[in-house]
Structure formats: structure tokens, C-alpha cells
Length: 348
Ligand code: NAD
Image (cartoon, rainbow, N blue to C red):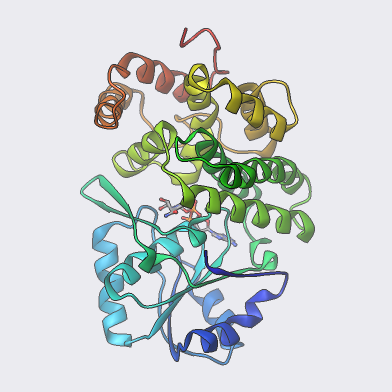
């Protein structure tokens, strides 16, 4: 687990944390349009910023990563600081995978990547992921002030992504009591924070709660293997170019419904954490209350892609030891495409 610095104004600790890690030449990574914010933020830290790469994109496309490597080679850093969501963290991780240099992560969404040793890259529509301790950030700074600019609808999708990590951890064959505790508390915290962010986006306390939930969700994600939900979301993101968090947010109630016959006890834990009777209906309602997107159509899937996505997803499930799921997956994708309430009769 990385060293965690949690608190409003925590960004002021970048210099001290770099010092602890022996970093003299920081290379910053962020998403497009945020370079000035990042420069301004780092200006006050008194550290040498030898370069800023502001081309981080979701799913770490190889061509963009190459551009980051070229910028990095010119800057000759001895450490990275990623400031932003999972895309910024993901690029810093992909660079660190090659160099082994330390990362200070300053997350500004609820992706949770900052506390996992998981990396991902996409090459010609195929997303590859792996685990490597080299990419695990050494220090994570959670500063809720930096999340005040995260639009409530992006926060909603990102928070549902964090809940998906928790649900995935509860369902995982690797789950243990500690991971399950993180997961259940992560769901509970996010389920309280997300509707509150939608109502009062400037409330620093609820933004802090959401970061706490994101950290727990990331710890749960990093401890176990994920299942069908994550494989399906990665397929839709990597191959069909759908946005990461939004896709997770839409899929979650449908994938939980599909998995429930295998795991009634998990359903109870999810419902308990959500504070409702039924896990599937609770997740569906929460996403809507928080303002997350409501259908795969709304996040960019085309109707004519459903059949191909179902075939590919069934292939992936077959490789994971779950054969014969194509019809169920097609039905799931159709319902999620339309944003229909998940039908408990759908999977027998
Ligand atoms: P993102 O990082 O792309 O951010 C979404 C949008 O929000 C971007 O446009 C970004 O510029 C903007 N943004 C971020 N913070 C902001 C702020 N404070 N104010 C205003 N705008 C802000 O999206 P994400 O969902 O955080 O991350 C998705 C990526 O993370 C995907 O590539 C996914 O695969 C990866 N991920 C990896 C892991 C892991 O453990 N390896 C875990 C979760 C997600």
C-alpha cells in the first residue's frame, strides 16, 4: 500500500513527499487542458518540474504513451507526479512500468488507480492489463479541494466506478474479510456522498467523503481479481472506445443482476451498504439520483455494435472459464443499451 496523505490542502506536501522519496526532477502527467492548473499547483511546491505531459487519455493508447515517453526522455526526470483522474495516473504508471521511477499520485476523481499495482494499455482496440508493484504510486495525496471542479455528472460516474470496484471485490473468489470490509465501507460512503455532491457540489466535506470511499474502493480493487463486470467494461472501453467510468456506472446493476444467482450473500452485503432492500434496484436508483449516465446508448455504444460486443464478451468469458454466456450477455447489453430497469426474471 502507498503512503497516504489525506486532507484538505494536502497538495502543499508535494515537496516534502518528493524529498522523502529522493526525487529532485519531477515529471508531471495530466489530461488535456489541465497543464496550466498543474503548473500553477506545482509552482508553489518549490520542486523542479522538468516537464509536463498533458496528453493523458483513457485506457492509455500506445501512440499517446509513445509521445509521453519522448517528452520524458527530453526532460530526464527521476520521479513522476500525476495530477488528475485515472487517465493521468494510468500514464504515470505506464511510464513507471518501463523505468521503475517513483510516482506521487494526486487523484482528482474516484478511479482508485492510485492505490493499485494495476496498469493498463490499449493497442489497436485491444486493452491489456497487468499487475506490477513498480507501478504502485509510492505516495498518494488526497486533497478534496482539487476535486471541487469535478463536474457533478463526472463525479457521479466516477463514484459509481468506485462502487463497481467494491462490488467486484465482494464477488471475487479472492476476497477476504479485510477486503470485504473495505468494499462494504466503500459502497456505504460513496452511496452517501454521491447524491450529496449532486445537491451541494461545493461542499468540501462530502467531496472528502467521496475521496475516502474512492481510496477504500481502490484498495479493494487492488487486492483481488475482478470478474465479469470489469472484463465487460474493459471490452467496451478498449474495443468500442466507450468512456471508462460512465460505462461502469451504466453496466453495474445489470452485471450484479447476472451474478446474483451465484452469490446471494453478496447481494445482502451490497444492499446493506446501500441502505436498501434490493442491491440491483438500489444501484440502479443510486446512479440516477447521483446524475450518472443512464444507458450505453448515452455513452456512445451503437445499437449495431451490441451483437459484436456480446460475441467478444462471450469469448472473453469462455477464456476466463465461463462458457456459454453469449445469449445472457446479449440480453444484458440490450437492456443496458436502452437503460431499462434490470429485470429480475431476465436470467432465470
Ligand atoms: P479521467 O482521468 O479520464 O477523467 C475524466 C475527466 O475528468 C477528464 O476529462 C479529466 O480531465 C477530468 N477531470 C479529472 N479531474 C478533474 C477535476 N478535479 N476537475 C475538473 N475536471 C477533472 O477518468 P477516470 O474515470 O478517472 O479514469 C479512467 C481511466 O483510469 C481509464 O483509463 C481506466 O482504465 C483507468 N483506471 C485504472 C485503474 C487501475 O487500477 N489501474 C482503476 C480505475 C480506472
